[in-house]
Amino acid sequence: MEGDKDEIIGEVVEMGEENQRMVMDISLKDLSRELEEFAKIRDWEQYHSPRNLLLAMVGEVGELSEIFQWRGEVPKGLPNWKDSDKEHLGEELSDVLLYLIRLADICGIDLGVAATKKIVKNAIKYPAPRSSN
Image (cartoon, rainbow, N blue to C red; front, side):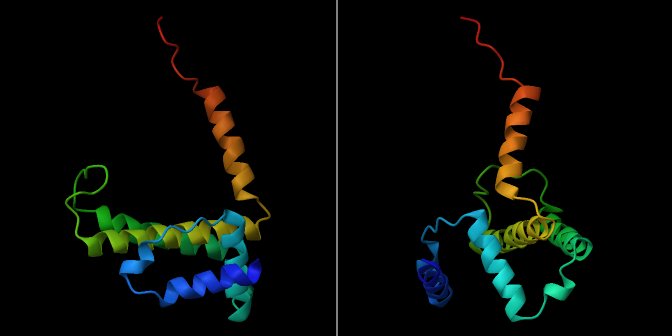
């Protein structure tokens, strides 16, 4: 199975832009393993302390913020945005996500479990309004 996933990722990288729109269902654990392997191959683990990863993520959030900086409010779905702007947005969102996943992994936090628990906690803290039937 691991080899199949690596093969798929390699194929996606080699695909033309049109074909990259295929939907890939990948878990947080899969991304975590990919990031760990990526760092190991490049001997970057020595730099992946919680502090360094957090600061890198904050930098990426800054880059993400720049995309929206002078646009004012934008409608859902970004209908008036150029494809290149949406692609850039996707890249910056991905950078933030990947640093977040790596940070959670380095800290020993199962991000999927933590997020699920937080959703449950929020549902209790902010219950849905009751219908008036």
